[in-house]
Length: 452
View 1 (cartoon, one colour):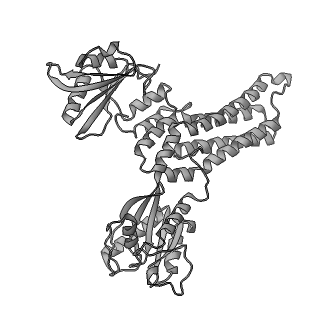
View 2 (cartoon, helix red, strand yellow; view 1 turned 120 degrees about the vertical axis):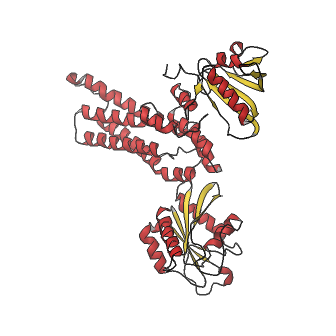
View 3 (cartoon, one colour; view 1 turned 90 degrees about the vertical axis):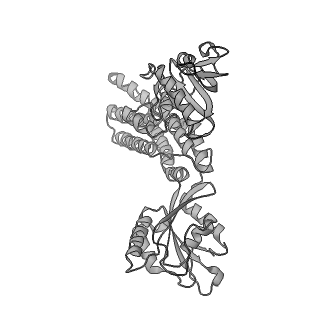
């Protein structure tokens, strides 16, 4: 029984605006009773079976018709929230939706808070915390890869792995604590060598999850890419070619780009946020100088920098050195543009392209993907960490296991081992929500949209 069971909540679950259908959700102990006060159909919703749909009409307090509707009935615990719930499908006119919401509020519901339906699903054990967070990720996914990753989380791939590690630690901890109960009898329930091996195995598994974070973060959030180079090397031309439209002004006059232009593009399912920056050079033009300052900031904030050179000007070693002072050189992709003009006496570059003809662009895309993902070989069946909260909990669990190993190596009392094992168990439990605080829950669910 949780603190929400007294309240019956409602919210519009579909985007605002005019369209074909609007869905209004109601969840809580009085869902059917309240809906029956405004709905007229062949049978009362209170008397209907779960997972049934009923056609009827909704009337206001003056018995004036509001709209023809379909109402879906879900009885606890067989609903998204685990509570009695109804979903009202009505014509998508904001006036109609508002009238129905107002009627529901007058008859005993209250407006749902952001994420409250999913929060109730978590509190009623319909989802663990990782799966609940994945709901928001599914909604916000913008590429196939991020959607697949979110679906894996929602399907419990990471939760299952965390549960396996946690249960293995619980098993080991139970033997350690049992020995403490029989300390005076000098009984050994688990060999310290076996315990050390188990801790190392779990620590290695945690390490694999921690190492997956960069991959998971790229899949979930995408990659910030700064297009950098001296004026007139073709930064804007490259952006326009990738986007297949004239998004940035292209001119033979240096210094045309004065501000940062951002565009998103999906390449092989990964979101790349491209920032076309002003050409970096010394300038007396006050507006261009501001553009150059913003370019340098874009470089610092970038996950990947594409340093563009061209056939005419050659490799810009001074600019490469400047960028290398701002970010790790491993995050720099050096390319040569305008190869359609000829390639005589050229230095080595990561990729050679023509933003005019498109030659080499596919090779550039492959290199961008390689730089973003590194040498990872994760698949859709791999448990991957993409959430900073999960990463932090795993990091803390690893630290606790490090203390366990130290206690074993120094032959310390079982009390020290037991305390740190329990801490590691709690750290893993915090990921799936077995151990968590109200502050953490509020921070997670207030980021959801209302109606979800």
